[in-house]
Image (cartoon, rainbow, N blue to C red; front, side, top):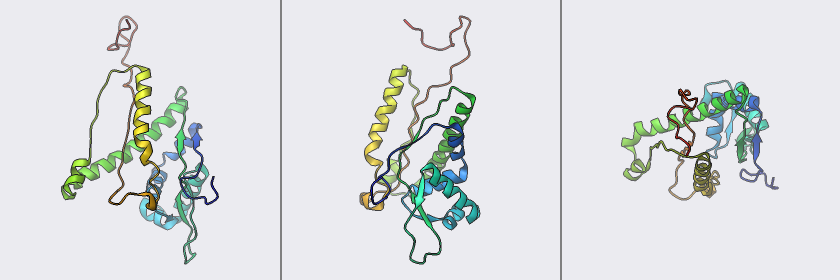
Length: 211
């Protein structure tokens, strides 16, 4: 960590414990993480308004997020009455072994929480798009594609999509945002369909034959 302690100057934090990852899927914690990701500094009272919880409850969640590396205390405000918090700026890497029931359940909980949050962003934009400037309204993109890929191609596709987003990830701080920019949710999902039941020959029905 650099001497100034500002967001964006931390080493990555990797989570491998299913119990810890599952704890992060709590709706209130997800809402606080999302709010802090704007670069704003929020107090426990601010987070209470956001989540509908009490300030003491959100203070607990903030301290837990600090332990996980998502949040950190910000410099005190002039009135000194309540501690503000900010995003730590650390790159959070989730690395779970989904080969166990606990690992699979934790992975599922985190994915569901992220998809629910992203769905809400997309639906809110669609519902209010009539009031958007034409270019912003047309810039929003919603698309999906079902592809037939090998496991090597799936891994490569995920890496290439991540590389496209990488140059834009360091713009959390207000001073790093281009003029005219606004917060945009970019969601990448590269995941195989669940294998269908095995056919008469013992191979999954519908799977491509090797050859």
